[in-house]
Length: 508
Image (tube, rainbow, N blue to C red):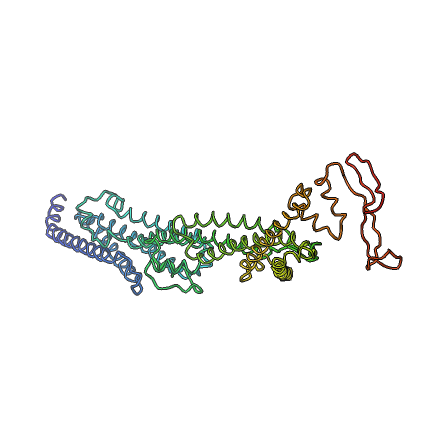
């Protein structure tokens, strides 16, 4: 039996040797097929979104790998039967892992391009940046994870590749996913800046024009603005310009808010008027609210303008409005000051120049000047009362000049009156005890002598008051009658400072 077995084995040796040689050749062919498949995979590793049906080529590679795997399994079975060398499956395992990683990377890259394309179509005013940033960062993290597993120490084949082995991988494979990662990095940076732009409600068309000019892009259609048109500006490459534009928009917004507050305040500011007995007309009441608004708004402009112009932002666009308001506030203040001073002089001089005929005869030139001023004041007050807007009343063309001329003329009338009072004091030295204001009051009480009571203490310290009695006096100067006449006041008693009353022997 042993001899027969030895004879049979000897007879089979040539056949087994032939099968072993055939298996060795098949192993070489399998190795060549696997290497060709991997070479094709390396060449096509970078995902090309512009390619027609890019996944068809990857599917074809997968089909080739299935055939290779089936052939390798059949070869392994046959090699075991004839005790031949089995083709090592390390290359097959590496090919399988690289194919899987490329497919996973392609999916992420395709998802990246699809997502970015969808985001670009989002209308700007419907944009909500945080979710997009979250997706972009998640995609970058997943791409980085896949690429890490494709590196020499990433565990693709279960062992660390040597530098020489890694260098044999084409750069197209080693750099797979780089473009997508760069795209996401650019989009992420641009989204962060776009979020800041979107959150800044004060970003106006002029700021967009400034930004597009810096970025070297054409003007944007703000009515149809989308995220894609904003991303086309490549904001991540012009971050400083974006921050400058945002700071300028914020500075201009603060300045605009201040100017709007000033506009609104002056729309409602009105001058008020009171009736003056001396002139029997409405005169300007002291405009405390207007002066308070002037103080506040002048202080606001003095504070806002330096703050906005410290770095050159915010002032240029509103320079016209700022200059206009500064000039208007200054004119309103100066006009009101001239107005109140002219009115004060007018009211103090009116009882004398309009009623005292003796004074009018003695000062004819000043009287004529006062009458002209009187007409101007009545007209100005009448116009202002009809249109009491503080801003409009003070900004009437030529009003400041007109009131200034009135004030200067009334000062001249007051100076002439002062000279006249000096002459009156020389005629009656006791009048020297009165101030100019008191003396004017005494002289203006000609038709109503009881008004002198207000100044009696200045004339004599021992008399506290004079007791008066109204009597009727005939207009012709004859004896009083019951059927008509003019009521005049006559002094009938003197009241001392200690309260003692001394009747006069006859009315004066």
